[in-house]
Amino acid sequence: MIYADYNATTPLSEAAKAGMAKAFECWGNPSSSHRAGRLANALLEESRERVAKAAGVEAREIVFTSGGSEANGMVLMGSALQCGSDFRLLTSPVEHASVEKALPLLCEKLGTQVERVALAADGALDMEDFRNKLESFRPHLVSLMAANNETGVLFPANEIAEICARTGTLFHTDATQALGKIP
Image (cartoon, rainbow, N blue to C red; front, side, top):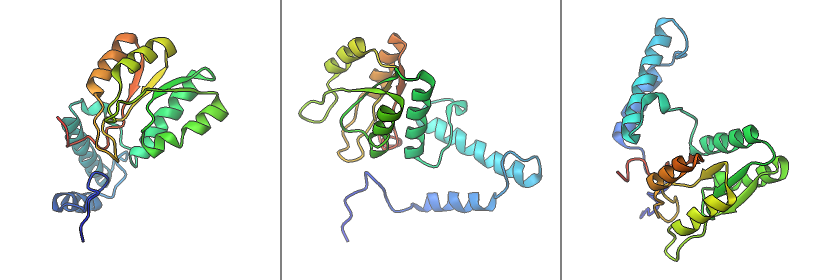
């Protein structure tokens, strides 16, 4: 069989299998003070350190969820609920389905306003349009993926983060497809 969708998922590597086997042996609640809990907590914190190192961040910045879709939903819903009915979101027309499927609920139930950044012919983010919409729309949150799960096109997440930081705008990037693939 020829399988050409490695950007979305791959067979489980031997290293991942070994890591999972180790985790299955640490079945304790990592919040518990008994021995099984302490062992589970140690493994959890070791995992947090490894992910942080791979992502180039501090371990305290890592929050584990069941997956990227849950994490995207938490960011979008949490931000919208905190800001209220005038929540403004700047995103792109090619975000992951977990972002796209959250938008109708955000708009209909919470009054969220959504603006989309234009794309260039090659699928790259139009950075001039991004800067213009950031200034004119004044979003509470910018949510743009780092690497497209279908095309592999990379958005300049670091540059976007710097621009958002200068304007005091919250920035969320779904980097699920980027981790381990780009520096």
